Image (cartoon, rainbow, N blue to C red):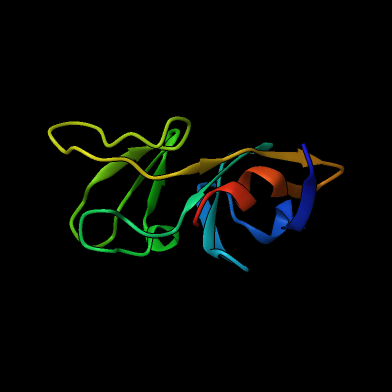
Length: 109
């Protein structure tokens, strides 16, 4: 994997998110607990809601526009909703958030 640094872990509050701009589009970075982060596309497939502005709970995010809930590990919509968001490998090292640039380059963010 080819990891790129996208910011400090402390820049994202616990159970919060931030949007990161890439050449392929915006990626949402979610912090679900002290040392766990997830990266997904920032756009909800339902109505295009900005997922980085959604509510982070457990390992899920709820879209701020129409309350669709997505699993941050798999990208799958939960409940009665159908659809998915793209996910990208992410990790924390020495207090910095890293995402896999190689995987990001293969998909449209």
